[in-house]
Amino acid sequence: MVRNLLIVSILSLIIVSSSCNSDFDVNDTWRDVPTVFCVLDKSQDMQYVKVNKCFIGNLPASEMASVSDSLFYDCDVQVKLHKKQGNSILKTWDFWPVDSIPKESGYFASDRNTIWVGKPELSEGFVYEIEVNIDNGRIIAKGSAEIVDGCRIIAPDARAPKIELSRYTNDCNIKFAPGKNANLQETNVYFNYLEVKTSGDTVQKSINVYNNQSYRVSNDSYTTIEQAFSVASFYSSIAAQINASDESVARRLVKMPECLTFSVSTADENLYTYMQVTKPSSGIAQDRPIFTNITIDAESKMPGGAAYGLMASRYTVSLSKAVGSETLDSIARGMYTKQLKFQPWTDNYYITHKPYDK
Image 1 (cartoon, rainbow, N blue to C red):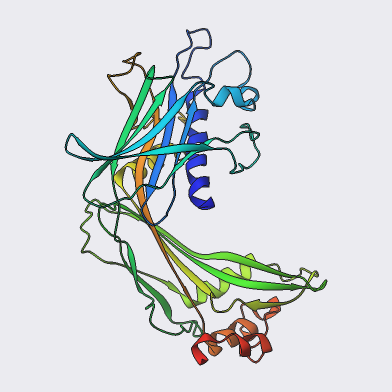
Image 2: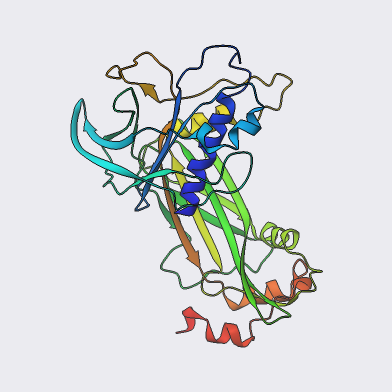
C-alpha cells in the first residue's frame, strides 16, 4: 500500500513542479489548474487519487511549494470513480480524503498530505473514469483508463519447494504472462536477509539484485515473456551492495523462507508514455513536453480550462522462494560473498527454518 502511495505522490510532485516553472509568465493572470493522478492497481485492495493545484507567484517555487495552501484546495473536492461501458455508467464509487499517510520531507509541504482513497471493484473489459469535482462543479476534471489484469509469474514455479543458485555459470530464469492491456513490464528480484548486530538486535534488510524494464507495442495477453540473469551477477550484486567492513554486524543470515522475492509489474500505455515524457533529459535542450490525459469536462462552470495529470492502470504480482543448502553454502563460503559474515547452512537458524524439509 505504501509503495503504491509513494508512486502516486512522486508523480504528483513531478507534474506540479514542471507546471510551475518558466512555462508560466509570473506577471500573467493566475489560472486555476488542477493536477490529478490515479494509477489503478487491481492487485491491491485500496486505490488512491492525488489532487493538487498548480501555483504561481513572485517567490521561488521551492519556497511556495513548502506551504500547504499552495498545493491543496481549500474548497470542497469530491472524487468519484465510474465503471463505464461505452457512454453508460454501470457503477460509481465515492473516494474519501485522508491525511493519515505521511509523506517524505523535501521541497514540498509535508505537514499535510491529503489523499483520496477508495475500494472499487475493478474488472477487465471496462473503462474506468475518474471524476474530480472541485468547488461544487466550478471545475470538473476527468480521465479514463482500462484495467491491466492477469499478470502472473510462471517461473520460478510456485509449487517448487526451493530453488538453487549455487553454480556461477548458470542462469536464473524468469517467465511471466504480462496480462491484458499491458504494454510496460518491469521485473525486480530482491534478496532478503537478516543482520544480527553486535548489540544483539536483528534487522531485516533487502537489496535489489535484478531489474529489467521493457516495452512492447502488442499487448496480447497470451504472450509470455522470458528473462534471465546470471548466477554470477547475483553474487556480485550482493557483494557490491553489502558493507563487508560494517563492525556493528556480528553475522548475517539469509531470511527464511522468503529468501528471494520475484516481483513483476505491468502497466498500460498511459503510464509508459508519462514515464518517457517526464524522465530527465540527457541532451543540451532541457525543455520537455508535458503529457496529460486529464481534461476539463464541458459540464464545468468554468469550461475550457486546463488540467494536468495521469489516469493509468497497472498490476503487480510477487513470489517469494526459499533457497537450498547449496546456495546457502555458496553465499557463506563463495568467492564473491565469503567476507560478508553470512552463516553456513549448518547454522541453527537454517535448521529450524527449512520449509522444504518439513
